[in-house]
Amino acid sequence: MSNHTYDVVIIGAGPVGENVADRVVQGGLTAAIVERELVGGECSYWACMPTKALLRSTAALRAARQLPGSREAVSGDLDVAAVLRRRDAFASNWKDDGQVSWLDSVGITLYRGQGRLSADRVVEVTDESGTATELTARHAVVVATGSAALLPDIPGLLEAKPWSSREAAAAPAVPGRLAVIGGGVVASEMATAFAALGASVTMLARDGVLPLAEPFAGERVTESLRAAGVSVLLGAEAGAVKRDGDGTVHITLTNGEEIEADEVLVAIGRTPNTQDIGLGAVGLTPGAWLTVDDTLRVLGEDEAPLDGGWLYAAGDVNRRVLLTHQGKYQARAVGDVIVARAKGETVDDSPWGRHASTADERAVPQVVFTEPEIASVGLTAAAAEAAGIRTRVVDYDLGAVAGSALHADGYKGHARMVVDEDRKVIVGFTLVGPDVAELLHAATIAVVGEVPIDRLWHAVPAYPTVSEVWLRLLESYGR
Image (cartoon, rainbow, N blue to C red; front, side, top):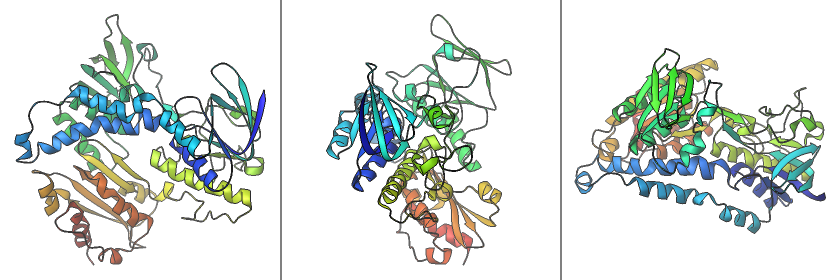
């Protein structure tokens, strides 16, 4: 077995692993990255990019039809084949040549195969031919293996060969009938996409639609899905699944009702990709989420970093926030803190410090690309109250803003800001409406910067834009 030594070894070459490696190399250290699938990871090929490509064409058509003049210029129906081709292009046709080329250009060494911890600071890589290579890390090993779709223990489900988010994102054709088990972000976005692409969609939302968002957000998306022809069954739960000889999927609900579909998508949550990465060799539990400290060092059963603090975990695998952009944020902090420790420099792990991932707890931005879009950052009103914050919640009809009326006829939307009344700063912000995604970063800056309400009055929104909602919210709050 050959052995190679690097300053840092990263298991997982998705966007999180790539960013860790990049920061490490920029800091003057050497890095090797291990990947068993495609360099670029879930986001590039089976999540963020291809799914948003599926959704964008339908959203653009819908927007054009909401305006006189452009509405009359639109003829014909959506070209589904063209949408799928564009989706394929954004997934690089499931080839990672470009990503591999980038790794090489910045001096990051790639090892293809299954990476497993075999001892402290040692990763063994087994390639497709069975050949093993041992990589030793002088300073740190970073686990950035991400997560996979969680499949519930429903009788017959596995045998029915269900879709996960991967199969939905890469589907070569649109099924005539699609059943979706779940009501979260993936379930809602894929129900939106496939209904617009012509499928008859049934959604089994046991816990409701988007239950972690502000209640009004889930209500508006539910209303929109139903208006688009989706059968949204709130509280419905699958009790058994069977695919018969002609390919039809039969889903028996716990109340005895039966649903028939051509495909069934399961989108109820995620599970960590830690089953086969050698956690047992370093005293950790295979298949478990990895618990980390403020600088994302992996903690053992004694709740302390492993001896020497050499093992880190970034991205989905640490379960702090399962979002690509937040994983990349963690990656920058991890890469920089590894460099700092390797060089004996000061570590700044104070809140909002260079080496702390403070935003994971206080200011996570997220966009749900449904119709309408949902853009949020920070805490919901319920979460802020549960955290013991004395809040004031301010709501405003987004459709009543002049810029919204110009944006689309019949614009409907809603905005909410959650204010910490003791500190007079915003701790949560949610927008629901067409094209609100691009409004989110202003709210994120306000939350992260802890900008006082009195100072926000001096941030004057341009007229007439949808951003004028900031002025309306402040007027509603009072001064």
